[in-house]
Image 1: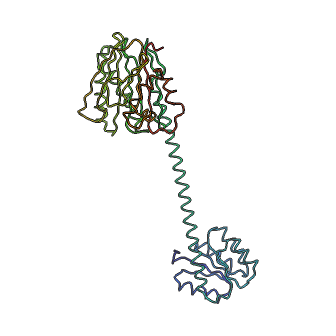
Image 2 (image 1 turned 180 degrees about the vertical axis):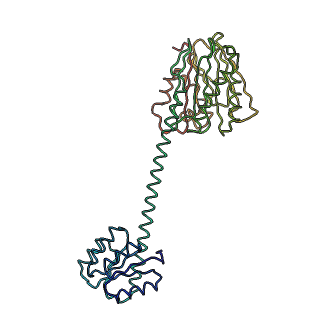
Length: 394
């Protein structure tokens, strides 16, 4: 509704008509100003800033059309109502073209028509003002949103660069052992992470981790994982020699670290240590599915093991498993995002299909890319990580 205390400015050289209109509108609750000609009307306009102008067309010194032009220059959206005794069509058309809200012809037999026109013009003016304010607010919000998106993009670019710099080189060879990996994030940043590196002249460490959730918060935990594993190895080294350690100790260290950080995130992961001298793999499992798949002699089979997720339970303990590595083999570690690509309706059916698919891929990362169609993936619901380590694989 219109503002009942709106200020109206009546400009008319006919004192009787002007006084009559002013008295009626004043009784209707409006604040009314009066001017006998255009110049005085403009002075009042500049001094009082009325909400609506009522003017005649035929006036000395300045006619109504010129007055409308000058008012529009000062305030384009201000409503102007013309009340004129000169019922000339061309004048009416020109007044409306210049922005007049209405054109009424004297004599006004019913002043209620003028009041109705005033209220309608004020309502329209209010709506235009509100729309302009909403539009300005929307444009401001859009600018703020775009600035935030640009900042977010910069943060994501920086975060992605950090992640990429933390990942190991792929492919990578350590004597007879070869490592290769691929990570396919469902969002710009990934909650999956892999790492592998030599810790001394006879041991190689590797792991695959899948952080709960997606996006930046999960990606941050991958940075934390890298820091905790690196720090653990640094603190374990005494006199330049790394002491004997078990993968279960690493999982236990990360479990306590994540719980103490209170990030609300947990991790499923697989960690292993290869003893090159003995040809033995020691590994531990932290609630991760699917289990690693060993490919040898043309067939694939799961490694055995189980364990609780990392960073979820204070009382969690982790078990070490030992495996004598074949002369020729590959070991494939996968995050659970791969399950979305496997045939079958149930988890059991999907897990049953995985070893055969890895065997058909020849146990290589390139073969897995082909079998799973990784090059053509779009809009995956979860991150996918693949880590393949092998020895003497033809």
